Picture (spheres, helix red, strand yellow):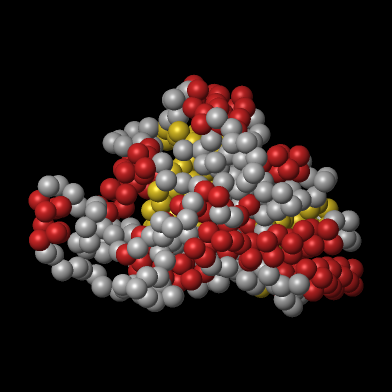
Length: 420
């Protein structure tokens, strides 16, 4: 059962990650959380009294509704994020879909979505939600006037990334929240790139700082838990977090649609959460080391990372992110454009070419050929993705080793281009 012996609001994230959920007891003595794979549960007098009264969410009935291991993981995630409730899904995309359908029930509706966002999120809206009558209205995350125009056209949900994919733009979430709420719209923040270690949009301020008023905070937070929360490239999951009231329709849609996370994946995720604080801090250090090494390196025209003082998001990152943490993802652009990217990536000896992030190993991907392949070059530029862009998702390796790997690959790629 969830641990009620601590004031969880005063515990720091490294402690919450270990002690934020179930606590062993004489009746439930396993130190490591047990894996309960059952798909169904015995119904008895106690269950009947609840279900006969119309309560199908409190008792254990069927694992499509709830599972003890899934619930334990949700409690840990909610406490890390500063949320009242969390709901785990089979993937991050399923989590985003559930937020949109909970925030905009019925047919029709309009969503304002930042252009600086994962290409798969755009595909979800254009290929699935559009068929359900939901219109997508894009805006530049840094342009308040564009967001205001979307809200004037009737958007009732605003969806942004706290740190954008792939160029790590830090959104002005307080201003965006004020605009959305003043217009009667809700704000959904995809916080995958940050994780609750780096930023908590539902709280709205770094730990220890005064929280802003509710109108400057997000209503929903979503994560692809496949990434930093899972952290080992061995599970796929998503999570939605928010207030108890707002989460009720999210949970209902998850139950009806059957999108709950499998208990075995939830067990893996709980296992991984114990080290999320350690891993994310190591990844942030590695990302900073790579960014500093690439800045000014031959063949590199631009480095995107909010930890660099020259980055346009640096001042906002200092205000909104946890002190000293700027995220695990950076991007850089090559003077040879997209044609030069695969040669460079192929010369890396530590970093792996794979389309994910948040794992213990450093991964690289080329947005033009992977996450943003469905966009035209013009659309990619509007999203801040220039020609020759390479995204780097830092792992937990030694920063000096990673920096040397990238610099050696750049040198070899440059030499090959000069001789060819």
